[in-house]
Length: 50
Picture 1 (cartoon, one colour):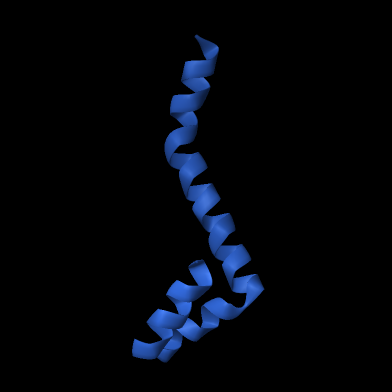
Picture 2: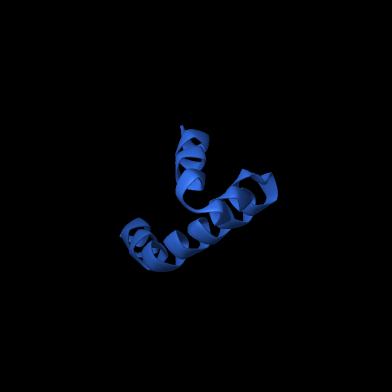
């Protein structure tokens, strides 16, 4: 489903074609995981310490 979204977006802007590369998607997933852990990590650690 993600690839279908990329194909749809590529019709309007060819810059989205870079998302077809696995390494780019892996880096974006890593950055998303880092952002989530930095924003919600403190909450989960505090919750587990209770």
